[in-house]
Image (cartoon, rainbow, N blue to C red; front, top):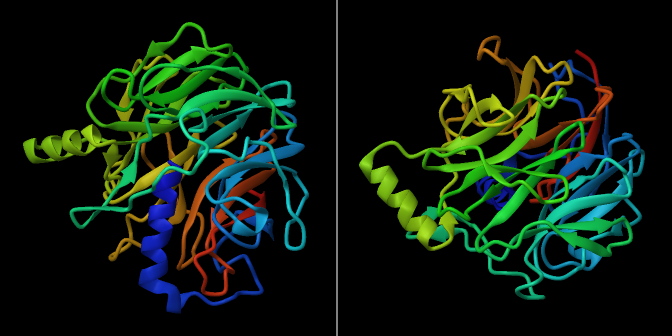
Length: 354
């Protein structure tokens, strides 16, 4: 998912850099769900900030060169930290590329995917293939457990192919993740210790970015599923090269075991980074379905039956990766707002009100 984020930010930055202006008021007009909004980071690409089970910390990934990294690594912060003049603690190895971290229930360990076993260096990140935007599916990604000092204490996957995008159920007993171990990008679940691996989606296409509902009974995820013969051929051809073209995605919902799968949105363009509202009755996600030129991306809310679609953010930039605190009082997300015309994507934390 991280490479998709970088791709979309680059597309946006080249297309509308002149339209971005520094805004002293971080909350835009009609963003009525935000009681307050605080900027957390101030440079680089910062995304996928996930809360600890006790809501006291967040873990996120960043490629901020000022923090001594060349590509995405994992950093930890207290919920009230701000890094305008300081640097957060890095808790990944500093080698390879990382993605998609998530706290374990003890709040003292976390899981994340990394390529470091194959190579200490950052793997290449191609953005175009025959003139089309693509992003890589690294077969060197595996899922690891680490403590908050950056010491790897376990390895959960060791299959050939891509294993990443892992999140944990609110009960702390199950993990859902995306894998290519069967030759396609499907969703799997496993126990918290890596045992009892089960495939739960089976249709051709890229299923990823899955999150559990607050009660653990359902999953929401985004998928790009080719339909026509031409689309299928192109998808398979790119996947054989370890690439995907993530420009058309819709949201899907199912039970946590994969049953009762159904498509939630049919909006067109890219609908992604979905999470459940704390009530379990709505989905918050990022989309550019209203955009004529591929941007902006804003946050939207929709009921589980696909009705009552409402817009949450109202920027001219890029808002994505929303994640509610477990008590439902705060929302962390990534945004290009207030970046003074740069390509920087920073973390923000809002006080949320329904």
